[in-house]
Length: 151
Picture 1: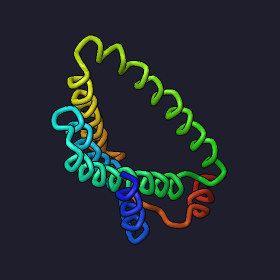
Picture 2: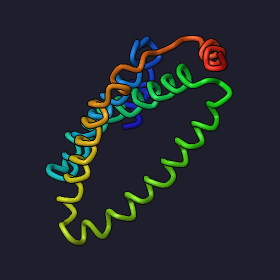
Picture 3: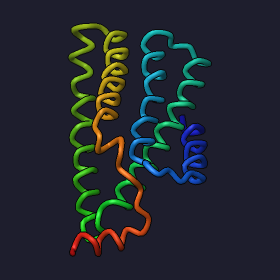
């Protein structure tokens, strides 16, 4: 996965997406195969390939998310938005980890892993259905955005 993240970073570095949020959310779909394979077919070679692809998707999402935030949120509000974003991650990631144990106790480990992949798939597809996610444009020059927001 780390090698895939390095590759994703290089790809993102060379990209100039007009709709980075759409690209970023769409690349989250690249994380689904490694989760599902872990539950259904946990063999080292297939997992390594899928983890590489997931790493590309994860790093592409991270860069695209940051570009979207930095180019669309006024500079004087950006740190607060990042704080809320990080807070959400700090709350919901451990919550998912806490729920994984009891759920796997009820339905089994394999079903829990595959189910989590399906949750990522459905949530990502749902996010892609939101027009403001699909259509958010990249605006270079965030200070100009901040000046427009004041007017």
